[in-house]
Amino acid sequence: MRVKAALVAGALVVAGAVVFVVFVVGGGASADPINLTTTGARYAATVVIEDPAPGRVAVEVMVSEGDADSVAVSAVMADMGHSTPELAATERELGRFVAEGELFSMSGVWEVSIRLDGPAGEEQLAVKALITD
Image (cartoon, rainbow, N blue to C red; front, side, top):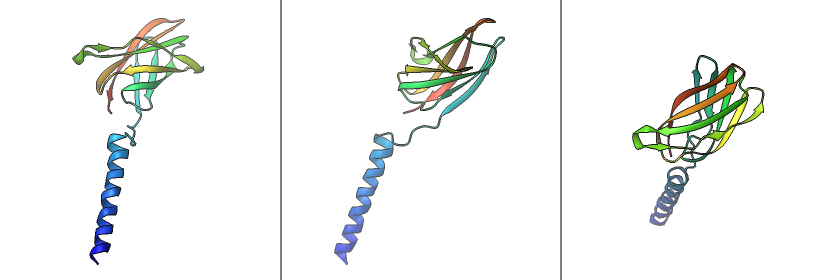
């Protein structure tokens, strides 16, 4: 009976260790996508960050108002004095742009700037995003 209890206890310890490594250390549970909408005088856009974590990310910008020819994104964490270079987005289909690269160097609240340019002129929109590990 003691051997069986020891085996069960050992199995529970191993299972707990696997859960800890996968979800806490390894980041197995990714953060929910961030989906934010912003509107300016010339353009309106929805910004989607699929895996909002530090490091390389893809940011999708869907322009819902205005006819943007080009889109670029950058990010600032004012509290920490961090900023990132602008990433040019590629138009994947009409009104849908995707920028990929290093945008967030650490967890925290970032202001994501979206620069749109088209026949109506250039406009800068912004959204705040909470980036987590």
